[in-house]
Length: 319
Image (cartoon, rainbow, N blue to C red; front, side, top):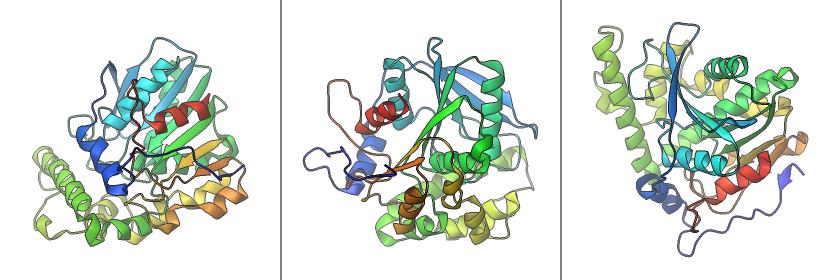
């Protein structure tokens, strides 16, 4: 059933609003009990990626990709890891370049289409670990990366990768960027731009003359940022070219393993083109679930375990 007709998610009373669902977990959720062991791996271009491992040698491993300006310590990542551990899985969260607490070595940084970094992580995991079954889980930008990677690989995907779950995915980057530029979403846009500026200033210290933040205060949208930085640094013509090449929606038709895509209908980050109904209808491997509520990486649930609906839903799918 490619389209999940009736989602089981029901928000708590008075918390159905998309902005509340987005902001409350990001600001106030605390997840305890997860202890990571860090591993640093080298990328083919001489940079590094930091992997944070949790588990006790299960046969099953989930490989988790975080969202833009996130990391392995975000509540949504910790919550998913904790739920996996409770259900007998191991987990590893890979921190994108520049997101693990120190600047990366190269001028480049993470972006929505950088599937070569996910490939580096998977190649390392597959060659050095002995889990029988792998599942990919991605949030927001990490979800877009995961879907794009699965589509790029198609039927050539490593057979140990059995399933995938992605949540709150801007699978059409252009429409999502326009959506975030709306006045109602300025709180998110300003926060992203402030965080990205800190990363740029950190790079300025270690590679002076190669990057700068002159007139950065004039940037107002992702188009401004991607035109100035993402496109020029990573070899795209402009922001539109970057969005076109990096959006995962065109790759959905080639995904060859069961994949659950959960995008809430009230997600303030997502425009209509981020709900790929026609692609899900055309590919029986894509299970598209669109709860009426949930916000962006929200899906709040109150229970004694502190486990959110999205975590239980992901576990039920990969198991």
